[in-house]
Amino acid sequence: MSSLHQRHLAVSPDWLALYYKNPVEITHGEGRHVWDADGRRYLDFFGGILTTMTAHALPEVTKAVSEQAGRIIHSSTLYLNRPMVELAERIATLSGIPDARVFFTTSGTEANDTALLLATTYRSSNQILAMRNSYHGRSFSAVSITGNSAWSPTNLSPLQTLYVHGGVRTRGPYAHLSDAEFIAACVADLEDLLGHTREPAALIAEPIQGVGGFTSPPDGLYAAFRRVLDRHGILWISDEVQTGWGRSGEHFWGWQAHGENGPPDILTFAKGIGNGMSIGGVVARADVMNCLDANSISTFGGSPVTMAAGLANLSYLLEHDLQGNARRVGGLLIERLRAIGVASECVREVRGRGLMIGIELVKPGTDEANPEAAAAVLEAAREGGLLIGKGGGHNTSVLRIAPPLSLTIPEAEEGAEILAEALRSVE
Image (tube, rainbow, N blue to C red; front, side, top):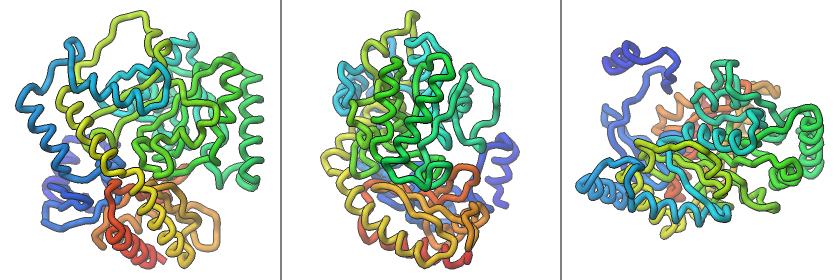
């Protein structure tokens, strides 16, 4: 055990998770690579949990941060803030929400917490619809709507949460149905649920479930839900903390795969927009955002430095069509991983879109989740020079692949080969 690991254990809570039997200290990065304290280089296929969205040490972002820090680092939202207004203008336009207002936070957890405050206040209801297998953050309100027991440490809650079918296509009671039948069954379940309860404030849903193992419903499910929600006046919150900014390749926002009946009422974002800087936020229709009847500010949300980073990062993403790169390179990577999966008895499914890919592992010859294999592949991949993540529903048995969106084809091929070797090592 390293001395830093010992020091970490001495001052950190027991529940603060670390990857690897011998945790790695990452000291610096460049492009799609990072280096540890021993000087070893790794290809990064997890990006600090989908947060290093464009590239490590992207010159455009580091320059913007340095220049802004040289002027002023902090002022709070009590004062006019030009970078904050400029980034809010761009996000409001990109969101697709009409007459949008934007509030910045410091994390996705805080963004979802704010969205819940807005929805429950707007609707005068503390009842929330959430998806099974979901994850929305670590605050008291966010863990209470999280449909994944591994990440929800308490049953105590300020909210009454009801869980809806549909976030996982290939497991559960409707897995055997066609896509159209699956959607119809989930809608019927929602209709039935609403017939037995008081009016909820909102449905919150990740278009692609992140911690849940990059699972998703058929396209159009949330559009079908929206028809039901609208009849009851229930708001739709799209949690885009992991799916936003073009990561799925096909769409800029995850909700656009379900956009037949319009954009969500509330959209939350974080992670990739800051490329490592702590930015989160909420976009909502003006009447929803303005429903609070008390003063509020943010001390650190919308800070000049993080806003400068977000502006530079978003500009780079759009100017270099990283969404298109995610679609092209991600499509090739998914096909390569599916070919590898066919040859492995441990792989149940390779799924995802763009550069948001999950590899679900099972015990050979069964449909039973295999968290031990996932942990072993995580270790073997690191030994091979590749950093990946893991997640999943009832058991943590899904390998999570989410590199920076500037990933090149040779890097995708290199990472796939390391993963292939790692999978072979545990069979």
